[in-house]
Image 1 (tube, chains in turn blue, brown):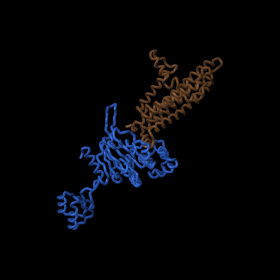
Image 2: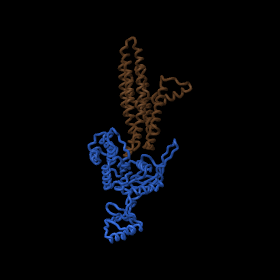
Image 3: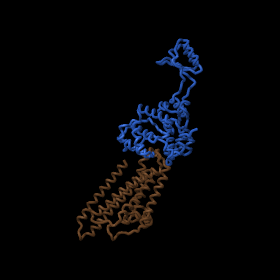
Image 4: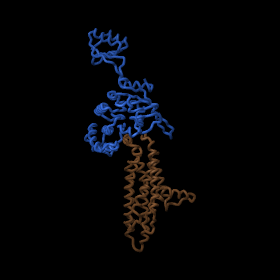
Length: 311
Length: 253
Protein backbone atom coordinates (compact mmCIF):
# COMPACT_ATOMS: atom_id res chain seq x y z
CA UNK A 1 0.00 0.00 0.00
CA UNK A 2 1.66 3.27 -1.05
CA UNK A 3 2.01 6.06 1.52
CA UNK A 4 -1.00 8.34 1.17
CA UNK A 5 -0.25 11.78 -0.20
CA UNK A 6 -2.70 13.26 2.31
CA UNK A 7 -3.88 11.61 5.47
CA UNK A 8 -6.32 12.99 8.03
CA UNK A 9 -6.94 10.92 11.19
CA UNK A 10 -9.69 12.05 13.58
CA UNK A 11 -8.88 15.69 12.96
CA UNK A 12 -10.79 18.26 15.00
CA UNK A 13 -10.54 22.01 14.63
CA UNK A 14 -12.57 24.54 16.59
CA UNK A 15 -12.48 28.27 15.90
CA UNK A 16 -12.54 30.26 19.11
CA UNK A 17 -13.19 33.88 19.88
CA UNK A 18 -12.21 33.99 23.50
CA UNK A 19 -13.32 37.55 24.15
CA UNK A 20 -16.84 36.79 22.95
CA UNK A 21 -16.84 33.25 24.32
CA UNK A 22 -17.67 31.84 20.88
CA UNK A 23 -16.68 28.39 19.69
CA UNK A 24 -17.37 27.20 16.15
CA UNK A 25 -16.45 23.60 15.32
CA UNK A 26 -15.02 23.55 11.80
CA UNK A 27 -13.92 19.91 11.66
CA UNK A 28 -15.07 17.08 13.94
CA UNK A 29 -13.21 13.77 13.91
CA UNK A 30 -12.56 14.08 10.20
CA UNK A 31 -10.70 11.20 8.60
CA UNK A 32 -9.83 10.61 4.97
CA UNK A 33 -6.87 9.84 2.76
CA UNK A 34 -5.76 10.63 -0.75
CA UNK A 35 -3.54 8.13 -2.51
CA UNK A 36 -0.66 9.16 -4.77
CA UNK A 37 -1.48 9.61 -8.44
CA UNK A 38 -5.18 10.34 -7.82
CA UNK A 39 -7.22 13.38 -8.65
CA UNK A 40 -9.38 13.76 -5.60
CA UNK A 41 -12.36 16.10 -5.37
CA UNK A 42 -13.19 17.58 -1.99
CA UNK A 43 -16.82 18.63 -2.08
CA UNK A 44 -19.19 20.17 0.39
CA UNK A 45 -21.58 23.05 0.95
CA UNK A 46 -20.35 26.46 2.07
CA UNK A 47 -18.98 26.31 5.59
CA UNK A 48 -18.51 22.55 5.50
CA UNK A 49 -14.80 22.69 6.39
CA UNK A 50 -13.13 22.39 2.97
CA UNK A 51 -10.93 25.47 3.22
CA UNK A 52 -10.18 24.69 6.87
CA UNK A 53 -8.94 21.24 5.84
CA UNK A 54 -6.78 22.75 3.11
CA UNK A 55 -5.34 25.32 5.53
CA UNK A 56 -4.55 22.58 8.02
CA UNK A 57 -2.76 20.37 5.53
CA UNK A 58 -0.64 23.33 4.41
CA UNK A 59 0.24 24.27 7.98
CA UNK A 60 -1.40 27.70 7.95
CA UNK A 61 -2.86 26.85 11.30
CA UNK A 62 -3.00 23.83 13.53
CA UNK A 63 -5.60 21.23 14.41
CA UNK A 64 -6.82 20.94 17.99
CA UNK A 65 -6.83 17.14 17.88
CA UNK A 66 -5.94 14.40 15.47
CA UNK A 67 -3.11 13.66 13.13
CA UNK A 68 -2.39 15.00 9.67
CA UNK A 69 0.27 13.78 7.30
CA UNK A 70 1.18 15.34 3.97
CA UNK A 71 3.56 13.34 1.75
CA UNK A 72 4.46 11.49 4.95
CA UNK A 73 5.41 14.63 6.91
CA UNK A 74 3.75 16.96 9.37
CA UNK A 75 1.87 19.87 7.79
CA UNK A 76 4.13 22.89 7.42
CA UNK A 77 7.28 20.75 7.24
CA UNK A 78 9.52 22.17 4.51
CA UNK A 79 10.15 18.64 3.21
CA UNK A 80 6.41 18.39 2.48
CA UNK A 81 6.15 21.94 1.15
CA UNK A 82 8.93 21.24 -1.36
CA UNK A 83 6.59 18.77 -3.03
CA UNK A 84 3.41 20.88 -2.91
CA UNK A 85 1.99 23.38 -5.34
CA UNK A 86 -0.86 25.46 -3.91
CA UNK A 87 -3.55 27.59 -5.53
CA UNK A 88 -5.79 29.29 -2.94
CA UNK A 89 -9.32 30.34 -3.71
CA UNK A 90 -8.71 34.08 -3.89
CA UNK A 91 -5.10 34.27 -4.80
CA UNK A 92 -3.41 37.36 -3.42
CA UNK A 93 -0.35 38.56 -5.29
CA UNK A 94 1.95 41.52 -4.89
CA UNK A 95 0.14 43.82 -7.28
CA UNK A 96 3.21 45.88 -8.09
CA UNK A 97 5.05 42.87 -9.57
CA UNK A 98 4.83 41.59 -13.12
CA UNK A 99 4.12 37.94 -13.89
CA UNK A 100 7.76 37.24 -14.70
CA UNK A 101 9.03 38.85 -11.50
CA UNK A 102 6.48 37.04 -9.39
CA UNK A 103 7.40 33.68 -10.88
CA UNK A 104 11.09 34.47 -10.37
CA UNK A 105 10.32 35.34 -6.74
CA UNK A 106 8.45 32.06 -6.22
CA UNK A 107 11.21 30.20 -8.02
CA UNK A 108 13.65 31.62 -5.49
CA UNK A 109 11.41 30.63 -2.59
CA UNK A 110 11.20 27.10 -4.02
CA UNK A 111 15.03 26.95 -4.14
CA UNK A 112 15.13 26.56 -7.90
CA UNK A 113 18.17 27.69 -9.86
CA UNK A 114 17.75 31.09 -11.49
CA UNK A 115 18.62 29.77 -14.94
CA UNK A 116 16.16 26.91 -14.60
CA UNK A 117 13.38 29.26 -13.49
CA UNK A 118 14.16 31.68 -16.32
CA UNK A 119 13.87 28.85 -18.83
CA UNK A 120 10.64 27.56 -17.28
CA UNK A 121 8.76 30.85 -17.00
CA UNK A 122 7.94 31.32 -20.73
CA UNK A 123 6.76 27.68 -20.92
CA UNK A 124 4.49 28.07 -17.91
CA UNK A 125 3.05 31.34 -19.11
CA UNK A 126 2.36 29.76 -22.50
CA UNK A 127 0.72 26.79 -20.77
CA UNK A 128 -1.69 29.06 -18.90
CA UNK A 129 -2.13 31.33 -21.92
CA UNK A 130 -0.60 34.46 -20.45
CA UNK A 131 1.99 34.96 -23.18
CA UNK A 132 2.11 38.63 -24.09
CA UNK A 133 1.19 39.81 -20.60
CA UNK A 134 4.57 39.15 -18.97
CA UNK A 135 5.45 42.83 -18.45
CA UNK A 136 2.03 43.98 -17.28
CA UNK A 137 1.70 44.55 -13.54
CA UNK A 138 -0.49 42.01 -11.82
CA UNK A 139 -2.63 44.78 -10.38
CA UNK A 140 -3.91 45.35 -13.94
CA UNK A 141 -4.84 41.70 -14.49
CA UNK A 142 -8.42 40.49 -14.74
CA UNK A 143 -9.76 37.91 -12.29
CA UNK A 144 -9.28 35.11 -14.80
CA UNK A 145 -5.72 36.19 -15.59
CA UNK A 146 -4.85 36.21 -11.89
CA UNK A 147 -6.25 32.70 -11.58
CA UNK A 148 -4.15 31.54 -14.52
CA UNK A 149 -1.06 33.10 -13.01
CA UNK A 150 -1.88 31.33 -9.77
CA UNK A 151 -1.84 28.07 -11.69
CA UNK A 152 1.51 28.91 -13.19
CA UNK A 153 3.06 29.58 -9.79
CA UNK A 154 1.54 26.35 -8.41
CA UNK A 155 3.20 24.36 -11.21
CA UNK A 156 6.51 26.20 -11.01
CA UNK A 157 8.37 23.82 -8.73
CA UNK A 158 7.14 20.65 -10.51
CA UNK A 159 5.21 19.54 -7.41
CA UNK A 160 4.14 15.98 -6.68
CA UNK A 161 1.00 17.19 -4.92
CA UNK A 162 -1.20 20.00 -6.17
CA UNK A 163 -3.69 21.52 -3.75
CA UNK A 164 -6.25 23.60 -5.61
CA UNK A 165 -9.02 25.53 -3.90
CA UNK A 166 -11.66 26.35 -6.52
CA UNK A 167 -9.25 26.12 -9.47
CA UNK A 168 -11.81 27.13 -12.08
CA UNK A 169 -13.06 30.14 -10.14
CA UNK A 170 -13.13 33.21 -12.39
CA UNK A 171 -12.39 31.25 -15.55
CA UNK A 172 -14.50 31.27 -18.69
CA UNK A 173 -15.61 27.96 -20.28
CA UNK A 174 -12.45 27.84 -22.40
CA UNK A 175 -10.35 28.36 -19.31
CA UNK A 176 -12.19 25.62 -17.46
CA UNK A 177 -11.59 23.25 -20.38
CA UNK A 178 -7.89 24.14 -20.28
CA UNK A 179 -7.82 23.35 -16.56
CA UNK A 180 -9.46 19.97 -17.17
CA UNK A 181 -6.88 19.15 -19.83
CA UNK A 182 -4.08 20.31 -17.60
CA UNK A 183 -5.27 18.12 -14.74
CA UNK A 184 -5.53 15.15 -17.10
CA UNK A 185 -1.92 15.79 -18.15
CA UNK A 186 -0.85 15.94 -14.52
CA UNK A 187 -2.59 12.67 -13.78
CA UNK A 188 -0.78 11.07 -16.71
CA UNK A 189 2.48 12.30 -15.15
CA UNK A 190 1.59 10.56 -11.90
CA UNK A 191 0.92 13.72 -9.91
CA UNK A 192 -1.60 13.85 -7.12
CA UNK A 193 -4.24 16.56 -7.23
CA UNK A 194 -6.46 17.53 -4.32
CA UNK A 195 -9.08 20.04 -5.37
CA UNK A 196 -12.20 21.58 -4.00
CA UNK A 197 -14.83 22.84 -6.38
CA UNK A 198 -18.50 23.68 -6.67
CA UNK A 199 -18.62 22.78 -10.39
CA UNK A 200 -19.74 19.18 -10.02
CA UNK A 201 -20.10 18.49 -13.73
CA UNK A 202 -16.43 19.28 -14.23
CA UNK A 203 -15.34 17.34 -11.18
CA UNK A 204 -17.24 14.32 -12.50
CA UNK A 205 -15.26 14.45 -15.74
CA UNK A 206 -11.79 14.49 -14.26
CA UNK A 207 -11.69 13.16 -10.71
CA UNK A 208 -10.89 9.62 -9.59
CA UNK A 209 -11.94 9.99 -5.97
CA UNK A 210 -14.61 12.04 -4.21
CA UNK A 211 -14.78 13.10 -0.58
CA UNK A 212 -17.98 14.84 0.46
CA UNK A 213 -17.83 16.81 3.68
CA UNK A 214 -20.60 18.55 5.53
CA UNK A 215 -20.63 20.35 8.88
CA UNK A 216 -17.04 19.28 9.52
CA UNK A 217 -17.59 15.58 8.96
CA UNK A 218 -16.85 13.33 6.00
CA UNK A 219 -20.20 11.90 4.98
CA UNK A 220 -19.19 10.07 1.82
CA UNK A 221 -15.91 8.99 0.36
CA UNK A 222 -14.80 6.66 -2.37
CA UNK A 223 -13.78 6.20 -5.96
CA UNK A 224 -15.95 7.98 -8.50
CA UNK A 225 -16.82 4.78 -10.35
CA UNK A 226 -17.94 3.07 -7.16
CA UNK A 227 -19.99 5.98 -5.86
CA UNK A 228 -21.73 6.78 -9.12
CA UNK A 229 -21.69 3.08 -10.07
CA UNK A 230 -24.13 1.10 -11.97
CA UNK A 231 -27.62 0.92 -10.55
CA UNK A 232 -30.00 -2.02 -10.92
CA UNK A 233 -31.90 -0.28 -13.68
CA UNK A 234 -31.47 -0.05 -17.44
CA UNK A 235 -32.84 2.34 -20.04
CA UNK A 236 -33.97 1.12 -23.42
CA UNK A 237 -34.40 3.59 -26.26
CA UNK A 238 -36.92 2.31 -28.76
CA UNK A 239 -38.46 3.75 -31.93
CA UNK A 240 -41.94 3.46 -30.43
CA UNK A 241 -44.15 1.57 -28.00
CA UNK A 242 -47.59 -0.05 -27.67
CA UNK A 243 -50.28 0.57 -25.03
CA UNK A 244 -49.93 -3.03 -23.81
CA UNK A 245 -46.18 -2.64 -23.43
CA UNK A 246 -46.54 0.66 -21.54
CA UNK A 247 -48.96 -1.02 -19.16
CA UNK A 248 -46.56 -3.93 -18.66
CA UNK A 249 -43.68 -1.52 -17.97
CA UNK A 250 -45.81 0.26 -15.38
CA UNK A 251 -46.67 -3.07 -13.73
CA UNK A 252 -42.94 -3.85 -13.50
CA UNK A 253 -42.32 -0.51 -11.75
CA UNK A 254 -40.67 1.13 -14.75
CA UNK A 255 -41.27 4.38 -16.60
CA UNK A 256 -41.66 5.45 -20.20
CA UNK A 257 -40.88 8.87 -21.58
CA UNK A 258 -41.00 10.25 -25.08
CA UNK A 259 -38.16 12.37 -26.41
CA UNK A 260 -36.99 13.56 -29.82
CA UNK A 261 -35.03 10.32 -30.35
CA UNK A 262 -37.86 7.93 -29.54
CA UNK A 263 -39.27 6.36 -26.40
CA UNK A 264 -37.08 5.92 -23.32
CA UNK A 265 -38.11 2.96 -21.20
CA UNK A 266 -36.52 2.61 -17.75
CA UNK A 267 -36.98 -0.70 -16.03
CA UNK A 268 -35.20 -3.07 -13.65
CA UNK A 269 -32.28 -4.98 -15.20
CA UNK A 270 -34.09 -8.26 -14.46
CA UNK A 271 -36.79 -7.38 -17.02
CA UNK A 272 -34.66 -5.93 -19.82
CA UNK A 273 -34.83 -9.09 -21.95
CA UNK A 274 -38.61 -9.31 -21.62
CA UNK A 275 -39.12 -5.68 -22.65
CA UNK A 276 -36.59 -5.93 -25.50
CA UNK A 277 -38.29 -9.07 -26.88
CA UNK A 278 -41.71 -7.41 -26.55
CA UNK A 279 -40.46 -4.48 -28.60
CA UNK A 280 -39.01 -6.70 -31.30
CA UNK A 281 -42.21 -8.75 -31.40
CA UNK A 282 -44.09 -5.50 -32.06
CA UNK A 283 -41.74 -4.76 -35.01
CA UNK A 284 -40.15 -1.90 -33.11
CA UNK A 285 -36.39 -1.22 -33.07
CA UNK A 286 -34.30 -1.06 -29.90
CA UNK A 287 -31.76 1.71 -30.46
CA UNK A 288 -29.78 1.15 -27.27
CA UNK A 289 -29.80 -0.56 -23.89
CA UNK A 290 -27.70 1.24 -21.29
CA UNK A 291 -27.24 0.93 -17.51
CA UNK A 292 -28.64 3.85 -15.58
CA UNK A 293 -25.90 5.82 -13.71
CA UNK A 294 -26.48 8.52 -11.21
CA UNK A 295 -24.64 11.84 -11.69
CA UNK A 296 -22.32 13.39 -9.17
CA UNK A 297 -24.78 16.21 -8.71
CA UNK A 298 -27.54 13.75 -7.81
CA UNK A 299 -25.23 11.93 -5.42
CA UNK A 300 -24.07 15.19 -3.84
CA UNK A 301 -27.57 16.60 -3.40
CA UNK A 302 -28.81 13.29 -2.06
CA UNK A 303 -25.90 13.00 0.38
CA UNK A 304 -25.78 16.60 1.56
CA UNK A 305 -29.54 16.93 1.52
CA UNK A 306 -29.97 13.87 3.72
CA UNK A 307 -27.23 15.13 6.06
CA UNK A 308 -28.96 18.48 6.50
CA UNK A 309 -32.35 16.83 7.02
CA UNK A 310 -33.73 17.90 3.66
CA UNK A 311 -34.73 15.06 1.35
CA UNK B 1 -2.29 52.50 1.66
CA UNK B 2 -0.07 52.06 4.70
CA UNK B 3 3.07 52.41 2.64
CA UNK B 4 1.71 55.67 1.23
CA UNK B 5 0.99 56.85 4.76
CA UNK B 6 4.57 56.14 5.80
CA UNK B 7 5.85 58.06 2.77
CA UNK B 8 3.51 60.96 3.57
CA UNK B 9 4.73 61.13 7.16
CA UNK B 10 8.33 61.13 5.96
CA UNK B 11 7.62 63.94 3.51
CA UNK B 12 5.93 66.00 6.23
CA UNK B 13 8.85 65.40 8.59
CA UNK B 14 11.27 66.44 5.85
CA UNK B 15 9.31 69.66 5.33
CA UNK B 16 9.41 70.41 9.06
CA UNK B 17 13.14 69.80 9.17
CA UNK B 18 13.79 71.92 6.09
CA UNK B 19 11.83 74.77 7.61
CA UNK B 20 14.24 74.82 10.54
CA UNK B 21 17.04 75.64 8.10
CA UNK B 22 15.85 79.22 7.89
CA UNK B 23 16.58 80.15 11.53
CA UNK B 24 19.96 78.46 11.22
CA UNK B 25 20.86 80.42 8.11
CA UNK B 26 19.62 83.58 9.79
CA UNK B 27 21.77 82.86 12.86
CA UNK B 28 24.81 82.34 10.66
CA UNK B 29 24.19 85.58 8.83
CA UNK B 30 23.67 87.50 12.06
CA UNK B 31 26.69 86.04 13.87
CA UNK B 32 29.38 88.57 14.85
CA UNK B 33 32.37 88.47 17.19
CA UNK B 34 30.36 90.05 19.97
CA UNK B 35 27.34 87.75 19.84
CA UNK B 36 29.14 84.56 18.85
CA UNK B 37 28.57 82.72 22.12
CA UNK B 38 24.87 83.53 22.23
CA UNK B 39 24.47 82.43 18.61
CA UNK B 40 26.35 79.20 19.34
CA UNK B 41 24.00 78.43 22.21
CA UNK B 42 20.97 79.12 20.02
CA UNK B 43 22.30 76.97 17.20
CA UNK B 44 23.15 74.17 19.60
CA UNK B 45 19.64 74.23 20.98
CA UNK B 46 18.07 74.26 17.56
CA UNK B 47 20.20 71.51 16.09
CA UNK B 48 19.66 69.38 19.20
CA UNK B 49 15.93 69.89 18.91
CA UNK B 50 15.80 68.99 15.24
CA UNK B 51 18.02 65.94 15.61
CA UNK B 52 16.03 64.77 18.63
CA UNK B 53 12.89 65.06 16.55
CA UNK B 54 14.42 63.16 13.63
CA UNK B 55 15.92 60.55 15.90
CA UNK B 56 12.67 60.08 17.82
CA UNK B 57 10.74 59.87 14.55
CA UNK B 58 13.12 57.11 13.53
CA UNK B 59 12.09 55.07 16.56
CA UNK B 60 8.42 55.37 15.64
CA UNK B 61 9.23 54.69 12.00
CA UNK B 62 11.16 51.53 12.86
CA UNK B 63 8.26 50.24 14.93
CA UNK B 64 5.67 51.19 12.33
CA UNK B 65 7.56 49.60 9.44
CA UNK B 66 8.19 46.39 11.36
CA UNK B 67 4.56 46.05 12.45
CA UNK B 68 3.23 46.96 9.01
CA UNK B 69 5.63 44.63 7.21
CA UNK B 70 4.02 41.67 8.92
CA UNK B 71 0.45 42.86 9.28
CA UNK B 72 0.09 43.95 5.65
CA UNK B 73 1.06 40.46 4.49
CA UNK B 74 -1.37 38.81 6.88
CA UNK B 75 -4.15 41.23 5.99
CA UNK B 76 -3.77 40.94 2.22
CA UNK B 77 -3.27 37.16 2.26
CA UNK B 78 0.00 37.29 0.33
CA UNK B 79 1.63 35.44 3.23
CA UNK B 80 -0.22 32.26 2.23
CA UNK B 81 1.45 31.97 -1.18
CA UNK B 82 4.84 32.52 0.45
CA UNK B 83 4.27 30.09 3.33
CA UNK B 84 3.03 27.40 0.92
CA UNK B 85 6.63 27.35 -0.35
CA UNK B 86 9.42 25.56 1.56
CA UNK B 87 9.94 28.62 3.76
CA UNK B 88 10.06 28.28 7.53
CA UNK B 89 8.03 30.70 9.57
CA UNK B 90 11.09 32.09 11.36
CA UNK B 91 12.83 32.62 8.02
CA UNK B 92 9.88 34.67 6.81
CA UNK B 93 9.87 36.81 9.94
CA UNK B 94 13.63 37.29 9.91
CA UNK B 95 13.44 38.39 6.29
CA UNK B 96 10.88 41.03 7.22
CA UNK B 97 13.00 42.23 10.14
CA UNK B 98 16.17 42.49 8.09
CA UNK B 99 14.28 44.40 5.40
CA UNK B 100 13.09 46.91 7.99
CA UNK B 101 16.63 47.27 9.37
CA UNK B 102 17.96 47.91 5.88
CA UNK B 103 15.38 50.67 5.45
CA UNK B 104 16.33 52.12 8.84
CA UNK B 105 20.01 52.03 7.89
CA UNK B 106 19.17 54.29 4.95
CA UNK B 107 17.27 56.54 7.36
CA UNK B 108 20.21 56.63 9.77
CA UNK B 109 22.60 57.52 6.94
CA UNK B 110 20.25 60.35 5.98
CA UNK B 111 20.11 61.48 9.60
CA UNK B 112 23.89 61.34 9.77
CA UNK B 113 24.26 63.54 6.69
CA UNK B 114 21.62 65.92 8.02
CA UNK B 115 23.48 66.29 11.36
CA UNK B 116 26.67 67.32 9.62
CA UNK B 117 24.82 69.56 7.17
CA UNK B 118 22.96 71.46 9.85
CA UNK B 119 26.02 71.94 12.00
CA UNK B 120 28.05 73.00 8.98
CA UNK B 121 25.43 75.54 7.98
CA UNK B 122 25.69 76.93 11.48
CA UNK B 123 29.45 77.17 11.03
CA UNK B 124 30.37 74.63 13.70
CA UNK B 125 31.69 71.04 14.03
CA UNK B 126 30.43 67.81 15.58
CA UNK B 127 33.01 66.48 17.99
CA UNK B 128 32.13 62.81 17.99
CA UNK B 129 33.29 59.73 16.13
CA UNK B 130 31.09 59.29 13.05
CA UNK B 131 30.48 55.60 13.70
CA UNK B 132 28.78 56.44 17.01
CA UNK B 133 26.18 58.48 15.13
CA UNK B 134 25.30 55.44 13.01
CA UNK B 135 25.67 52.43 15.29
CA UNK B 136 23.81 53.68 18.36
CA UNK B 137 20.67 54.74 16.49
CA UNK B 138 20.70 51.44 14.57
CA UNK B 139 20.79 49.47 17.82
CA UNK B 140 17.99 51.62 19.22
CA UNK B 141 15.87 51.09 16.11
CA UNK B 142 16.65 47.37 16.18
CA UNK B 143 15.10 47.20 19.64
CA UNK B 144 12.03 49.18 18.63
CA UNK B 145 11.54 47.13 15.46
CA UNK B 146 11.96 43.87 17.38
CA UNK B 147 9.42 44.95 19.98
CA UNK B 148 6.91 46.05 17.34
CA UNK B 149 7.35 42.79 15.41
CA UNK B 150 6.81 40.80 18.59
CA UNK B 151 3.64 42.71 19.41
CA UNK B 152 2.42 42.43 15.80
CA UNK B 153 2.47 38.63 16.06
CA UNK B 154 0.33 38.74 19.19
CA UNK B 155 -2.14 41.59 19.07
CA UNK B 156 -4.11 43.77 16.70
CA UNK B 157 -2.03 46.28 14.69
CA UNK B 158 -3.79 49.21 16.37
CA UNK B 159 -2.77 47.88 19.79
CA UNK B 160 0.79 47.40 18.51
CA UNK B 161 1.15 50.96 17.27
CA UNK B 162 -0.64 52.36 20.30
CA UNK B 163 1.82 50.59 22.58
CA UNK B 164 4.82 51.80 20.57
CA UNK B 165 3.55 55.39 20.54
CA UNK B 166 2.95 55.25 24.29
CA UNK B 167 6.48 53.96 24.74
CA UNK B 168 7.88 56.79 22.64
CA UNK B 169 5.91 59.42 24.55
CA UNK B 170 7.14 57.89 27.81
CA UNK B 171 10.69 58.10 26.50
CA UNK B 172 10.25 61.81 25.79
CA UNK B 173 9.01 62.42 29.32
CA UNK B 174 11.95 60.79 31.11
CA UNK B 175 14.77 62.27 29.01
CA UNK B 176 17.01 65.09 30.22
CA UNK B 177 15.21 68.42 30.08
CA UNK B 178 11.78 66.82 30.15
CA UNK B 179 8.99 67.89 32.51
CA UNK B 180 9.77 67.11 36.16
CA UNK B 181 7.83 64.26 37.69
CA UNK B 182 6.14 64.07 41.07
CA UNK B 183 8.75 63.55 43.80
CA UNK B 184 7.10 60.28 44.82
CA UNK B 185 7.51 58.87 41.29
CA UNK B 186 11.09 60.01 40.82
CA UNK B 187 12.32 56.45 41.36
CA UNK B 188 10.10 55.32 38.46
CA UNK B 189 11.43 58.04 36.20
CA UNK B 190 15.01 57.04 37.04
CA UNK B 191 14.26 53.39 36.38
CA UNK B 192 12.61 54.16 33.05
CA UNK B 193 15.46 56.47 32.10
CA UNK B 194 17.90 53.61 32.44
CA UNK B 195 15.56 51.00 30.94
CA UNK B 196 14.07 52.67 27.86
CA UNK B 197 16.18 52.43 24.69
CA UNK B 198 16.07 56.05 23.61
CA UNK B 199 17.36 57.66 26.75
CA UNK B 200 20.47 56.92 28.68
CA UNK B 201 22.33 54.08 27.03
CA UNK B 202 21.48 54.53 23.35
CA UNK B 203 20.90 58.24 23.11
CA UNK B 204 23.44 59.99 20.89
CA UNK B 205 23.46 62.80 23.44
CA UNK B 206 26.00 60.77 25.39
CA UNK B 207 28.52 61.24 22.62
CA UNK B 208 27.41 64.17 20.55
CA UNK B 209 28.61 67.60 21.28
CA UNK B 210 29.21 70.75 19.34
CA UNK B 211 31.84 71.83 21.75
CA UNK B 212 35.11 69.97 22.26
CA UNK B 213 35.03 70.92 25.93
CA UNK B 214 31.72 69.15 26.46
CA UNK B 215 32.68 65.93 24.69
CA UNK B 216 31.98 62.96 26.91
CA UNK B 217 34.70 60.37 26.51
CA UNK B 218 33.81 56.67 26.52
CA UNK B 219 36.18 53.75 26.46
CA UNK B 220 35.91 50.90 23.99
CA UNK B 221 34.71 48.60 26.75
CA UNK B 222 31.90 51.06 27.51
CA UNK B 223 30.87 50.97 23.89
CA UNK B 224 31.16 47.18 23.66
CA UNK B 225 29.09 46.55 26.79
CA UNK B 226 26.43 49.06 25.85
CA UNK B 227 26.07 47.82 22.29
CA UNK B 228 26.10 44.19 23.39
CA UNK B 229 23.30 44.96 25.84
CA UNK B 230 21.27 46.66 23.13
CA UNK B 231 21.80 43.93 20.56
CA UNK B 232 20.94 41.35 23.19
CA UNK B 233 17.62 43.08 23.85
CA UNK B 234 16.89 43.23 20.14
CA UNK B 235 17.80 39.57 19.69
CA UNK B 236 15.56 38.46 22.55
CA UNK B 237 12.65 40.42 21.12
CA UNK B 238 13.15 38.98 17.64
CA UNK B 239 13.38 35.44 19.04
CA UNK B 240 10.17 36.03 21.00
CA UNK B 241 8.54 37.26 17.80
CA UNK B 242 9.65 34.12 15.94
CA UNK B 243 8.35 31.87 18.70
CA UNK B 244 5.02 33.68 18.76
CA UNK B 245 4.70 33.65 14.98
CA UNK B 246 5.30 29.92 14.85
CA UNK B 247 1.98 29.31 16.60
CA UNK B 248 -0.01 32.07 14.99
CA UNK B 249 -2.73 31.42 12.44
CA UNK B 250 -1.78 32.80 9.04
CA UNK B 251 -5.42 33.54 8.18
CA UNK B 252 -6.86 36.83 9.35
CA UNK B 253 -10.37 35.32 9.43
